[in-house]
Length: 295
Image (cartoon, rainbow, N blue to C red; front, side):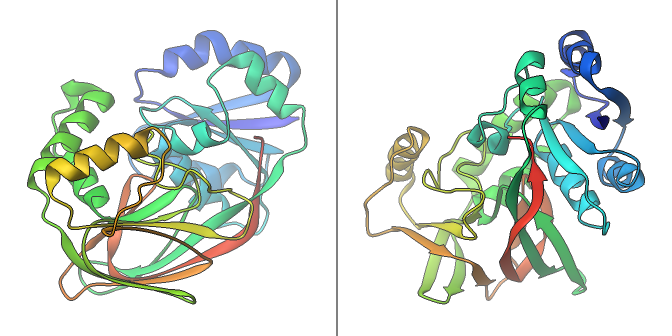
């Protein structure tokens, strides 16, 4: 099988790929490695190589995976997708049980890839233009995009994990709940939200399990709405959520839907797979079994 690996070329973990993963995979398959150097490269490389291989593997974090998915979906021909989790979060890979281990990945490549759902977002840019984007794991408003925005301004010497942790801490103490409306076929929610998340995967933000029951091939999103809970109480809820427990409280809501509308009276950012996408209002819908993934 011909495989193209789109590798995050600035990741500190790429040495792991070259030393212990590539040698194993290349014993059984013809592998071409192409490295990214800046934002947008993974999408462009996925588009460039989509028609010349049997599978494309995203080697990096959630951002690399997000770009590769969007690159594949820009083409009518879609090779199967593989994931090599080398980032700081890797939430979707974790939900699928995918590990950065050569023998494990080779075993996955020997199985038929599984049809997997993808989320489609229509929102607006800061200047009011329409944006369309795909996501594979979670999109959210509230603390999610605030953390992503803060992480982008952190010094690079902290490393991905350090910048991520600093951004989370800052966001936790500075983010103010935003007035957000959420509407689906059988569900309506309106209020001041700390988090409004639409999940195809089970967790985001490095194992924050907002949707522990989510399945990536059931044609449904799992929704999580966290209201304006006082910070100490929200921290207690967060500890429960990190342990894969659902929170039963008036300010916390869960729902299931295949199409969701998000809106806000004021400018509210939207992120997807840890990448800033645009602003509300947004329409988010499931695309059932859109890609095939080795998982």
